[in-house]
Image 1 (cartoon, rainbow over the protein chains, first blue to last red):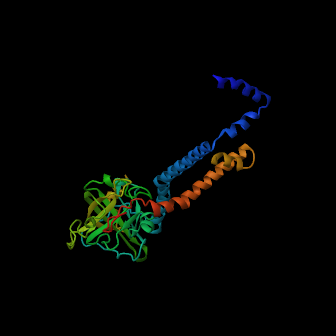
Image 2: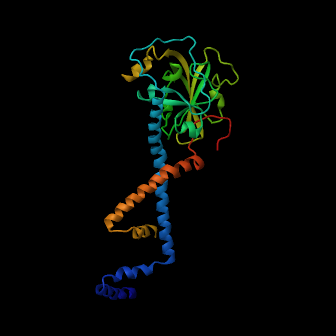
Length: 268
Length: 58
């Protein structure tokens, strides 16, 4: 009750001089109060920074990488795909020798299941900074090249940095994966059409998934064993496991001869 | 503490202060996106890269 009695007098003082109120309030802030205010502000800044980091990883790295990757496809100087469907060939396929060193872009991958406009560059190696974060899809060094006996193994991000394998879990047996290997200098330009056979989820140490004959380490590949393997992280945003998709080569085709029907149909 | 200080340090009338504040925020976001976040992603919190290998993963 007595505290209320002081109110009117303060009220009078403010009426005399309008600037009195802010001047009177400031000294009331104690050291503890100031620290709490500072802590609150630092927490706001930390929260904003964390939020921005999420925006950066989930969105900005995609914006940058997708732009970069479509430019890399252009650098291959691939002629516009022919409008006609070419001859499907199942004899021994021409194979480009593996590029030396990291980050050479030697081809592109198209997966109609991921959309008819899905066309990503493939780079040599699986180095995170030099290949996966920039080029996107990375060819495991010393695994087979497309069309060769063995296993053409490719890694890619499932989230962030252009997320080339974001929809890997949507792939079903029979889905086509079309690889085009181009070397403008030697006029090498070949399509390889693989068909998905199976998928599996493993821990990251299961390197037998990319063995020349998948999951049969030590077995020499025969002429029938022309495999393609995609590896991406699983579950999304986690490094705990890997999502693996295997595909087997169906046929190959000279790009000068025509375009695989899987792509001309997807474009319609 | 920090926010009122920034507001007081910025020169000019209120409209100009708002403009300066916007420029400052854009500059901070640019520095974070260009240098700070790539460094954090590479050295502190590497995102999962989707490869299989025999070496143990961190």
